Image (cartoon, rainbow over all chains, first blue to last red; front, side, top):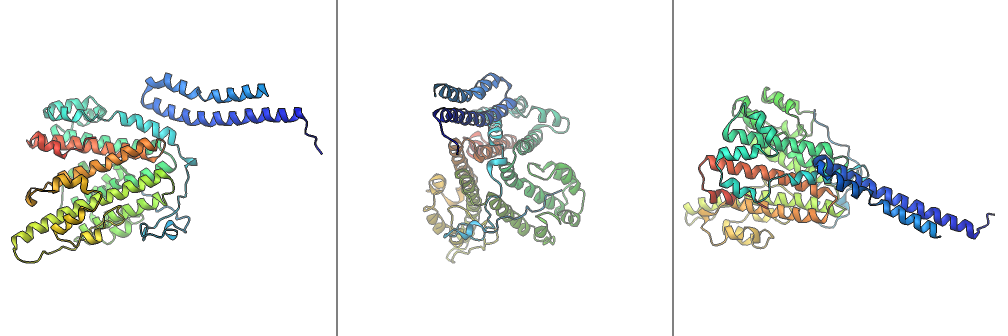
Length: 71
Length: 386
């Protein structure tokens, strides 16, 4: 029988926080990135705006990292 | 060559679950493809960027105040530049503009087909098959009336699945050979019934087949955007039926006026009506005389749109072109509203297709009207500006 310790649960929580936010930001970047590329194909001048919008979901995984550090 | 009919999956169709008669007789199916394999974000954003490049609404009044040469120059500076440049060696004046517009429209729709994948590609392809059907009709009509081959070729708009090389090959063949070329295609069974004298019947059948196929592709409109697409198509059917009914009823009324005192004679329009419209009961409307027909129209959602033209106007002066323009504007407005609600869906793609078609239609009306010396106000009433 595996014993559940406080340290073990904390590590598991940190992993969930990182994995969850990582998947969420990846999904969001996939959608925004595809849309940004679509817009840039038709109008190259949108590169700057598209780049900012594409990396914006990175903040989600940073939140996850902060939560993991605080746990 | 044409694709044969797609395999029919999920034989348990939506009509088995529906109590009402909306989908009665439609060979409906549950969608066999989901959004998983589609590329909505990429396609929708790119197509929205293409939509921005269309002429804005305030461009049309400016076009109305220009001469034909000025219009050609202005169009030649826009997205139509390449088409105008390439075709200017062969054509000039109104013909140059018209061919450039048609070619550009076909190219734009081919581009939409290239950049969409999965579900949006399937839906757009089915919707654009209307151009295939129009091209088949054009070739058959041209052949039947011995129109020169180059003139038939000039009238083709290859916006659908059939390629220009395939169609231009057909134009050089006889009617029997043309029909044989389609024997393996979904249009084959309908075209086989062509005997040289029943072209209108075949055209009606092709029109009905197109909508049946389109409904089959839409399937059971489970998601909100599919429901909107379904409603758009059914509204389009209503508009076609209503335009035809108005035209025939006006003709019947004028005929009956000449035979004073006799009861009105109603033509049998059963074969011409396209089934599965949204709000019109064509079964009832087609049996009515003009006055009763107008009374019955008051109960439909289209009355508010067409009443300014039909109400209090003399029968002979009723402009059916204006009625059609108003109905088209109504349908376009509905799509525009919905494209803002369903941002990442089939609706913005559909919006581009119908706005592009409308732009080409408007520009054609302007250049044809101007070359015929029509009054600006008269041309303006026929435009659909949103």
